Image (cartoon, rainbow, N blue to C red; front, top):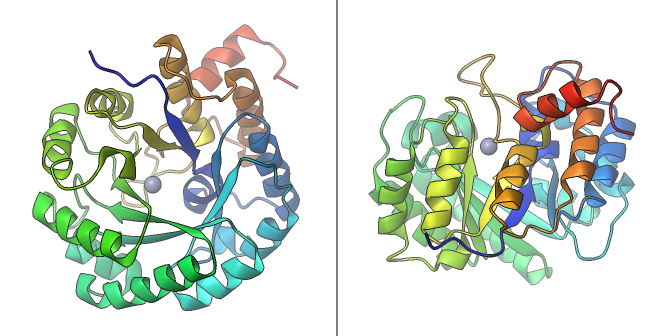
Length: 305
Ligand SMILES: [Zn+2]
């Protein structure tokens, strides 16, 4: 096995997690949680989304959150941005990094962004160029890489097309999203085998949801292929809008537990992360899907402070 010695974990819970939760958190609780995450050793935290609040009411307070959090040196604070209007708000919120997004499947892109894939490119190009000229780093997300809730299978050619457009615009990293959590390790390696012939391994990140319980296996399969950046949510927060009640992102605690015990360095402290996990679980008011959060509850009658 040829596993990397270091892995970067990008915490997306405050955005990808919270946007799919039924419970809306107060600005104070979001800020407090993000501040706790900042003290775990994480190098990257996606704090919110500057998408129109009409579409994502749970994150309507994005600007207040962005302005209210403590900024610790060495951490990249990212926000999701759909268009120029969102970018202006992200600038006001002084984020370090802007994340743009689109889908590899036409129907999901249409339903999620209200535009065809071809119509989305010029909108994102403008955002990417303005963000880069303002000195921000830019990350791209491509959704539905391993399956689409409307179209089923997604061709790798579609992923390549979207990836080439986004890299050509100037994004520095592309996160490949298993939006509905349907990927399996064999498929992950097959897709990566093709993508890695075209794109450098250090520019690709993997973003797995755990809908069917395959996320950690998919991460292991990606590690085998040399991938060293993964997105995850504390607690496994969130869910799948297409499968009510399903698991959300792979849980950061579970990724950490696996990597730590494989002696792969992440720089993130599991105990501190669990503590932030207990905080957010209590605020959300339901038992989250992170295995390590629940395993830790069994061993501790009172939650971590
Ligand atoms: Zn996601």
